[in-house]
Length: 336
Ligand SMILES: NC(=O)c1ccc[n+]([C@@H]2O[C@H](COP(=O)([O-])OP(=O)(O)OC[C@H]3O[C@@H](n4cnc5c(N)ncnc54)[C@H](OP(=O)(O)O)[C@@H]3O)[C@@H](O)[C@H]2O)c1
Image 1 (cartoon, rainbow, N blue to C red):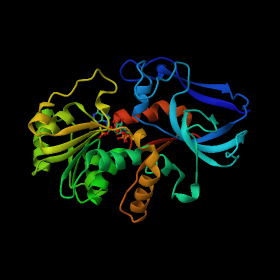
Image 2: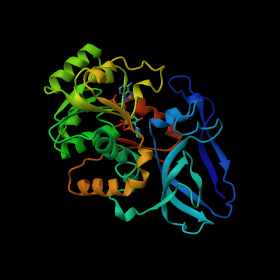
Image 3: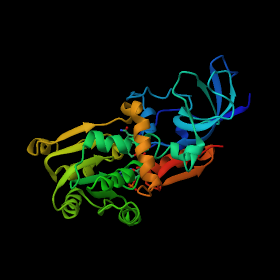
Image 4: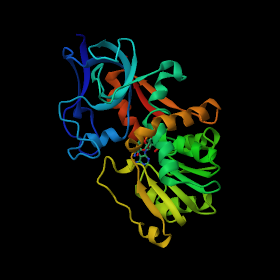
Protein backbone atom coordinates (compact mmCIF):
# COMPACT_ATOMS: atom_id res chain seq x y z
CA UNK A 1 0.00 0.00 0.00
CA UNK A 2 1.29 3.54 -0.78
CA UNK A 3 2.55 5.88 1.98
CA UNK A 4 -0.07 8.38 3.04
CA UNK A 5 0.61 12.05 3.86
CA UNK A 6 -1.96 13.16 6.43
CA UNK A 7 -2.71 16.58 7.96
CA UNK A 8 -3.38 15.77 11.62
CA UNK A 9 -5.06 17.74 14.38
CA UNK A 10 -2.51 17.63 17.23
CA UNK A 11 -4.21 19.91 19.78
CA UNK A 12 -7.42 21.91 20.08
CA UNK A 13 -6.94 25.48 18.77
CA UNK A 14 -7.37 28.18 21.39
CA UNK A 15 -9.02 30.98 19.46
CA UNK A 16 -7.44 31.48 16.04
CA UNK A 17 -5.68 28.27 14.90
CA UNK A 18 -1.86 28.34 14.66
CA UNK A 19 0.40 26.01 12.65
CA UNK A 20 1.47 24.18 15.85
CA UNK A 21 -2.08 22.86 16.26
CA UNK A 22 -1.45 20.56 13.27
CA UNK A 23 1.19 18.23 11.85
CA UNK A 24 1.77 16.86 8.35
CA UNK A 25 2.99 13.29 8.74
CA UNK A 26 3.48 10.27 6.51
CA UNK A 27 1.80 7.10 7.71
CA UNK A 28 1.24 3.69 6.21
CA UNK A 29 -2.03 2.98 4.46
CA UNK A 30 -3.72 -0.01 6.10
CA UNK A 31 -4.56 -3.06 3.98
CA UNK A 32 -8.16 -3.03 2.77
CA UNK A 33 -10.76 -5.19 4.54
CA UNK A 34 -13.64 -6.74 2.57
CA UNK A 35 -16.17 -3.98 1.67
CA UNK A 36 -13.52 -1.24 1.67
CA UNK A 37 -11.90 0.73 -1.13
CA UNK A 38 -8.92 3.07 -1.31
CA UNK A 39 -9.51 6.63 -2.56
CA UNK A 40 -6.68 8.72 -4.03
CA UNK A 41 -7.89 12.16 -2.96
CA UNK A 42 -7.52 14.82 -5.66
CA UNK A 43 -9.33 17.81 -4.14
CA UNK A 44 -10.53 18.71 -0.65
CA UNK A 45 -13.15 21.24 0.34
CA UNK A 46 -11.96 23.70 3.00
CA UNK A 47 -14.98 24.86 4.98
CA UNK A 48 -15.43 27.24 7.93
CA UNK A 49 -17.34 24.44 9.71
CA UNK A 50 -14.09 22.49 10.06
CA UNK A 51 -13.03 25.01 12.71
CA UNK A 52 -15.95 23.91 14.92
CA UNK A 53 -15.04 20.23 14.47
CA UNK A 54 -11.59 21.03 15.95
CA UNK A 55 -13.11 22.06 19.31
CA UNK A 56 -13.70 19.60 22.14
CA UNK A 57 -17.45 20.23 22.21
CA UNK A 58 -19.18 18.41 19.41
CA UNK A 59 -21.70 20.26 17.29
CA UNK A 60 -23.76 18.55 14.61
CA UNK A 61 -20.64 16.39 14.05
CA UNK A 62 -18.44 14.79 16.71
CA UNK A 63 -15.11 16.53 17.39
CA UNK A 64 -12.11 15.44 15.31
CA UNK A 65 -10.09 13.21 17.68
CA UNK A 66 -6.62 14.53 18.53
CA UNK A 67 -4.01 12.80 16.37
CA UNK A 68 -6.55 12.10 13.63
CA UNK A 69 -6.49 13.71 10.18
CA UNK A 70 -8.62 16.83 9.79
CA UNK A 71 -12.04 15.84 8.48
CA UNK A 72 -12.97 17.27 5.07
CA UNK A 73 -15.13 16.53 2.06
CA UNK A 74 -12.96 15.25 -0.77
CA UNK A 75 -13.24 14.06 -4.32
CA UNK A 76 -10.87 11.47 -5.68
CA UNK A 77 -10.36 8.35 -7.73
CA UNK A 78 -10.62 4.78 -6.47
CA UNK A 79 -7.12 3.28 -6.49
CA UNK A 80 -7.99 -0.22 -5.19
CA UNK A 81 -11.23 -1.86 -4.19
CA UNK A 82 -12.61 -4.80 -2.24
CA UNK A 83 -16.16 -3.39 -2.38
CA UNK A 84 -18.90 -4.22 -4.85
CA UNK A 85 -20.08 -1.15 -6.81
CA UNK A 86 -16.78 0.72 -6.33
CA UNK A 87 -14.30 -0.01 -9.11
CA UNK A 88 -10.74 1.28 -9.55
CA UNK A 89 -10.72 4.38 -11.77
CA UNK A 90 -14.15 5.63 -10.67
CA UNK A 91 -14.43 9.20 -9.29
CA UNK A 92 -16.03 9.42 -5.84
CA UNK A 93 -17.01 12.14 -3.39
CA UNK A 94 -17.35 11.74 0.36
CA UNK A 95 -16.63 12.99 3.84
CA UNK A 96 -13.01 11.93 4.31
CA UNK A 97 -9.99 13.89 5.52
CA UNK A 98 -7.03 16.06 4.48
CA UNK A 99 -4.80 13.18 3.37
CA UNK A 100 -3.47 11.64 0.16
CA UNK A 101 -5.48 8.44 0.56
CA UNK A 102 -8.73 7.72 2.39
CA UNK A 103 -10.37 4.37 2.98
CA UNK A 104 -14.01 4.31 1.93
CA UNK A 105 -16.57 1.73 2.92
CA UNK A 106 -19.50 0.42 0.90
CA UNK A 107 -22.75 1.67 2.43
CA UNK A 108 -20.99 4.73 3.87
CA UNK A 109 -21.19 8.36 2.80
CA UNK A 110 -19.08 7.99 -0.35
CA UNK A 111 -20.89 8.29 -3.65
CA UNK A 112 -19.73 7.72 -7.23
CA UNK A 113 -19.66 10.95 -9.29
CA UNK A 114 -19.54 11.45 -13.04
CA UNK A 115 -16.80 13.81 -14.32
CA UNK A 116 -18.53 14.02 -17.71
CA UNK A 117 -21.65 15.54 -16.15
CA UNK A 118 -19.95 18.76 -14.99
CA UNK A 119 -17.72 21.44 -16.57
CA UNK A 120 -15.07 20.83 -13.90
CA UNK A 121 -14.80 17.97 -11.42
CA UNK A 122 -14.27 20.56 -8.65
CA UNK A 123 -17.84 21.78 -9.22
CA UNK A 124 -18.87 18.82 -7.04
CA UNK A 125 -17.31 20.75 -4.14
CA UNK A 126 -18.86 24.10 -5.08
CA UNK A 127 -22.13 24.54 -6.92
CA UNK A 128 -23.12 20.85 -6.79
CA UNK A 129 -21.73 20.26 -3.28
CA UNK A 130 -22.67 21.43 0.19
CA UNK A 131 -22.00 25.06 -0.68
CA UNK A 132 -24.42 25.17 -3.61
CA UNK A 133 -27.04 23.18 -1.75
CA UNK A 134 -26.71 25.45 1.31
CA UNK A 135 -27.41 28.48 -0.85
CA UNK A 136 -30.29 26.81 -2.70
CA UNK A 137 -32.19 25.15 0.16
CA UNK A 138 -31.17 27.78 2.71
CA UNK A 139 -32.58 30.59 0.64
CA UNK A 140 -35.66 28.98 -0.87
CA UNK A 141 -36.73 26.57 1.92
CA UNK A 142 -35.69 28.46 5.04
CA UNK A 143 -35.92 32.12 4.01
CA UNK A 144 -38.83 31.77 1.56
CA UNK A 145 -38.18 35.00 -0.40
CA UNK A 146 -40.93 36.44 -2.59
CA UNK A 147 -40.22 38.30 -5.82
CA UNK A 148 -39.82 41.99 -5.15
CA UNK A 149 -38.56 41.48 -1.60
CA UNK A 150 -35.17 42.68 -0.34
CA UNK A 151 -32.65 39.99 0.59
CA UNK A 152 -29.64 41.06 2.68
CA UNK A 153 -26.68 38.65 2.51
CA UNK A 154 -23.59 38.78 4.74
CA UNK A 155 -20.37 37.04 3.72
CA UNK A 156 -21.73 37.91 0.30
CA UNK A 157 -18.54 37.56 -1.73
CA UNK A 158 -17.87 34.06 -0.36
CA UNK A 159 -18.84 30.68 -1.73
CA UNK A 160 -22.31 30.43 -0.17
CA UNK A 161 -23.04 34.17 -0.11
CA UNK A 162 -22.25 34.84 -3.76
CA UNK A 163 -24.62 32.08 -4.82
CA UNK A 164 -27.37 33.29 -2.46
CA UNK A 165 -27.24 36.77 -4.00
CA UNK A 166 -27.42 35.37 -7.52
CA UNK A 167 -30.33 33.06 -6.61
CA UNK A 168 -32.17 35.98 -5.03
CA UNK A 169 -31.77 37.92 -8.30
CA UNK A 170 -32.98 34.96 -10.37
CA UNK A 171 -36.02 34.87 -8.08
CA UNK A 172 -36.79 38.55 -8.75
CA UNK A 173 -35.62 39.98 -5.43
CA UNK A 174 -33.47 42.99 -4.60
CA UNK A 175 -30.13 41.56 -3.42
CA UNK A 176 -27.86 43.55 -1.11
CA UNK A 177 -24.52 42.07 -0.10
CA UNK A 178 -22.13 42.81 2.75
CA UNK A 179 -18.45 41.95 2.21
CA UNK A 180 -14.97 43.03 3.24
CA UNK A 181 -13.17 45.60 1.10
CA UNK A 182 -13.78 47.58 -2.09
CA UNK A 183 -12.57 44.82 -4.45
CA UNK A 184 -15.03 42.29 -3.07
CA UNK A 185 -17.83 44.86 -3.09
CA UNK A 186 -17.13 45.65 -6.74
CA UNK A 187 -17.33 41.92 -7.47
CA UNK A 188 -20.75 41.75 -5.82
CA UNK A 189 -22.37 44.27 -8.13
CA UNK A 190 -20.30 43.81 -11.29
CA UNK A 191 -19.92 40.01 -11.35
CA UNK A 192 -22.68 38.50 -9.22
CA UNK A 193 -25.39 41.06 -10.02
CA UNK A 194 -26.19 42.29 -6.49
CA UNK A 195 -28.13 45.55 -6.57
CA UNK A 196 -25.95 47.12 -3.88
CA UNK A 197 -22.87 46.25 -1.84
CA UNK A 198 -21.79 47.34 1.63
CA UNK A 199 -18.15 47.24 2.73
CA UNK A 200 -18.22 46.32 6.42
CA UNK A 201 -14.53 46.98 7.00
CA UNK A 202 -13.88 49.89 9.35
CA UNK A 203 -17.59 50.30 10.16
CA UNK A 204 -19.03 50.09 13.64
CA UNK A 205 -22.60 48.93 14.21
CA UNK A 206 -24.07 52.44 13.77
CA UNK A 207 -22.23 53.00 10.46
CA UNK A 208 -23.30 49.56 9.24
CA UNK A 209 -26.87 50.31 10.16
CA UNK A 210 -26.72 53.57 8.22
CA UNK A 211 -25.29 51.80 5.17
CA UNK A 212 -28.00 49.12 5.31
CA UNK A 213 -30.71 51.80 5.52
CA UNK A 214 -29.29 53.50 2.42
CA UNK A 215 -28.97 50.24 0.44
CA UNK A 216 -32.37 48.89 1.51
CA UNK A 217 -34.77 51.87 1.20
CA UNK A 218 -37.82 49.58 1.58
CA UNK A 219 -36.41 47.64 4.53
CA UNK A 220 -35.18 44.05 4.69
CA UNK A 221 -37.49 41.07 4.17
CA UNK A 222 -34.86 38.34 4.33
CA UNK A 223 -31.47 38.19 6.02
CA UNK A 224 -29.22 35.31 4.91
CA UNK A 225 -26.70 35.41 7.73
CA UNK A 226 -23.19 33.99 7.33
CA UNK A 227 -21.24 36.22 9.71
CA UNK A 228 -23.09 37.25 12.91
CA UNK A 229 -21.83 39.82 15.42
CA UNK A 230 -22.45 43.49 14.71
CA UNK A 231 -23.33 42.68 11.08
CA UNK A 232 -26.34 40.63 12.19
CA UNK A 233 -27.30 43.16 14.87
CA UNK A 234 -27.20 46.02 12.34
CA UNK A 235 -29.34 44.05 9.89
CA UNK A 236 -31.97 43.19 12.52
CA UNK A 237 -32.68 46.92 12.98
CA UNK A 238 -34.04 47.11 9.40
CA UNK A 239 -36.39 44.13 9.29
CA UNK A 240 -39.79 44.54 7.72
CA UNK A 241 -42.93 43.07 9.25
CA UNK A 242 -42.84 39.22 9.07
CA UNK A 243 -39.25 39.14 7.83
CA UNK A 244 -37.28 35.86 7.83
CA UNK A 245 -33.70 35.49 9.08
CA UNK A 246 -31.91 32.34 7.89
CA UNK A 247 -29.00 31.63 10.23
CA UNK A 248 -26.46 29.85 8.07
CA UNK A 249 -23.19 30.70 9.80
CA UNK A 250 -21.53 32.97 12.36
CA UNK A 251 -17.97 33.02 11.06
CA UNK A 252 -17.03 36.21 12.94
CA UNK A 253 -17.36 34.18 16.16
CA UNK A 254 -15.66 30.88 15.20
CA UNK A 255 -12.29 31.94 16.62
CA UNK A 256 -13.50 34.11 19.50
CA UNK A 257 -15.80 33.92 22.48
CA UNK A 258 -19.30 34.56 21.07
CA UNK A 259 -20.34 38.21 21.30
CA UNK A 260 -23.95 37.16 21.01
CA UNK A 261 -26.87 38.84 19.34
CA UNK A 262 -28.19 41.98 21.05
CA UNK A 263 -31.08 43.07 18.87
CA UNK A 264 -33.27 39.95 19.06
CA UNK A 265 -36.08 42.13 20.41
CA UNK A 266 -36.55 43.32 16.83
CA UNK A 267 -38.03 39.88 16.06
CA UNK A 268 -40.86 40.72 18.45
CA UNK A 269 -41.33 44.23 17.14
CA UNK A 270 -41.50 42.97 13.54
CA UNK A 271 -43.11 39.57 14.28
CA UNK A 272 -40.17 38.15 12.36
CA UNK A 273 -38.64 34.70 12.58
CA UNK A 274 -35.09 33.46 12.81
CA UNK A 275 -34.28 29.88 11.85
CA UNK A 276 -31.04 27.92 11.84
CA UNK A 277 -30.29 25.94 8.73
CA UNK A 278 -28.08 22.91 8.16
CA UNK A 279 -27.44 21.68 4.66
CA UNK A 280 -27.24 18.06 5.87
CA UNK A 281 -31.02 18.15 6.38
CA UNK A 282 -31.49 18.34 2.60
CA UNK A 283 -29.23 15.46 1.48
CA UNK A 284 -32.24 13.50 0.21
CA UNK A 285 -33.09 16.43 -2.08
CA UNK A 286 -29.58 17.26 -3.36
CA UNK A 287 -30.36 15.80 -6.81
CA UNK A 288 -33.31 18.21 -7.11
CA UNK A 289 -31.22 21.20 -6.03
CA UNK A 290 -28.27 20.23 -8.23
CA UNK A 291 -30.52 19.81 -11.28
CA UNK A 292 -31.95 23.31 -10.85
CA UNK A 293 -28.58 24.92 -10.11
CA UNK A 294 -27.05 23.08 -13.07
CA UNK A 295 -29.76 24.38 -15.36
CA UNK A 296 -29.22 27.99 -14.27
CA UNK A 297 -25.45 27.60 -14.59
CA UNK A 298 -25.81 26.17 -18.10
CA UNK A 299 -27.96 29.17 -19.01
CA UNK A 300 -25.15 31.47 -17.87
CA UNK A 301 -27.24 32.82 -15.00
CA UNK A 302 -24.88 31.68 -12.23
CA UNK A 303 -21.23 32.62 -11.85
CA UNK A 304 -19.25 30.07 -9.87
CA UNK A 305 -15.89 31.08 -8.43
CA UNK A 306 -13.50 28.52 -7.02
CA UNK A 307 -10.25 29.40 -5.27
CA UNK A 308 -7.93 26.42 -5.70
CA UNK A 309 -4.65 26.25 -3.76
CA UNK A 310 -2.23 23.41 -4.32
CA UNK A 311 -0.49 21.00 -2.00
CA UNK A 312 -1.36 19.23 1.24
CA UNK A 313 1.64 21.04 2.76
CA UNK A 314 -0.34 24.28 2.31
CA UNK A 315 -3.45 22.99 4.11
CA UNK A 316 -3.05 25.32 7.10
CA UNK A 317 -2.44 28.49 5.07
CA UNK A 318 -5.29 27.69 2.72
CA UNK A 319 -7.72 26.92 5.54
CA UNK A 320 -6.86 30.20 7.25
CA UNK A 321 -7.79 32.17 4.12
CA UNK A 322 -11.41 31.62 5.14
CA UNK A 323 -10.89 33.73 8.26
CA UNK A 324 -8.61 36.32 6.67
CA UNK A 325 -11.02 36.76 3.76
CA UNK A 326 -8.29 36.09 1.17
CA UNK A 327 -10.28 33.37 -0.62
CA UNK A 328 -11.91 34.47 -3.84
CA UNK A 329 -14.63 31.87 -4.18
CA UNK A 330 -15.12 28.35 -2.89
CA UNK A 331 -11.91 27.38 -1.06
CA UNK A 332 -10.54 24.12 -2.45
CA UNK A 333 -7.19 22.38 -1.87
CA UNK A 334 -5.69 20.36 -4.73
CA UNK A 335 -4.04 17.32 -3.20
CA UNK A 336 -3.05 15.12 -6.13
N1 LIG B 1 -25.41 25.88 7.87
C1 LIG B 1 -24.83 25.18 6.89
O1 LIG B 1 -25.26 24.09 6.52
C2 LIG B 1 -23.63 25.78 6.22
C3 LIG B 1 -23.04 25.17 5.10
C4 LIG B 1 -21.96 25.79 4.49
C5 LIG B 1 -21.45 26.99 5.02
N2 LIG B 1 -22.03 27.53 6.11
C6 LIG B 1 -21.57 28.81 6.67
O2 LIG B 1 -21.65 29.77 5.63
C7 LIG B 1 -20.66 30.77 5.85
C8 LIG B 1 -19.84 30.96 4.59
O3 LIG B 1 -19.14 29.75 4.32
P1 LIG B 1 -18.36 29.57 2.93
O4 LIG B 1 -17.93 28.16 2.87
O5 LIG B 1 -19.17 30.13 1.84
O6 LIG B 1 -17.05 30.45 3.16
P2 LIG B 1 -16.65 31.77 2.35
O7 LIG B 1 -17.75 32.76 2.53
O8 LIG B 1 -16.23 31.41 0.98
O9 LIG B 1 -15.36 32.24 3.14
C9 LIG B 1 -15.46 32.82 4.39
C10 LIG B 1 -15.60 34.36 4.27
O10 LIG B 1 -16.08 34.85 5.52
C11 LIG B 1 -15.68 36.19 5.66
N3 LIG B 1 -15.21 36.39 7.05
C12 LIG B 1 -14.27 35.70 7.71
N4 LIG B 1 -14.12 36.19 8.96
C13 LIG B 1 -14.97 37.24 9.06
C14 LIG B 1 -15.30 38.17 10.11
N5 LIG B 1 -14.69 38.11 11.31
N6 LIG B 1 -16.24 39.11 9.86
C15 LIG B 1 -16.85 39.19 8.66
N7 LIG B 1 -16.60 38.34 7.64
C16 LIG B 1 -15.67 37.38 7.84
C17 LIG B 1 -14.55 36.45 4.67
O11 LIG B 1 -15.05 37.31 3.67
P3 LIG B 1 -14.80 38.93 3.76
O12 LIG B 1 -13.51 39.17 3.02
O13 LIG B 1 -15.98 39.51 3.10
O14 LIG B 1 -14.66 39.26 5.20
C18 LIG B 1 -14.28 35.07 4.08
O15 LIG B 1 -13.89 35.14 2.72
C19 LIG B 1 -19.87 30.33 7.07
O16 LIG B 1 -20.39 30.97 8.21
C20 LIG B 1 -20.15 28.85 7.15
O17 LIG B 1 -19.98 28.33 8.44
C21 LIG B 1 -23.10 26.95 6.72
